[in-house]
Image (cartoon, rainbow, N blue to C red; front, side, top):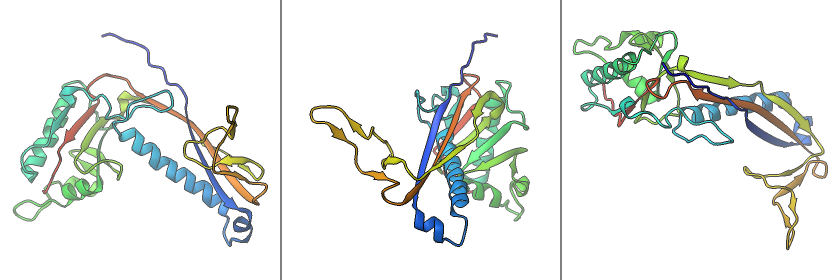
Length: 241
């Protein structure tokens, strides 16, 4: 065996939400708490999408687990997507993972879209029985299933999470009524010295507009602990059951 080091470095995720002071004061519910929960939920969705993606890593974000999948770990779905074809697809993915000494049921998960999950969980045999009865318990071939809208209907993944190192910090919240914001998803400095001087736009003064902002910052990073085997990718999926 050859061992090398893996470094996890903090990648900072930031979110800012603004609202008017009148809205907070006159609402019949605790909007500040509601906004905080909404930010956490939306951030989870965004992290899920990045984690599953094929996006390359950079100094500001980790790579998605579909990025750099080894050639022997990806394959197109077989046949026309019948029950027999689905069984073949599952068997090939499981075999490929176990041949690399991975795939323990306690750490391995299927990741698929709602459409593919509904297909396998509702597929019937010729006698009307469930083709995959274990799906009633949220598992497929003994392995739990993660269902997410952040994966394409044409892709199914089998992932051994024991081979992924992950560090996610706690969300840190800070509210302000006096900050000045450049309201853009890629914010620039409020002003930059030049010829001529540059001013970011649009800008909002929370103090001047009687507004309020809630900022969340959270550090996170993850990395694959092996180069191959831990992510099995099935492409061109068109399961019909």
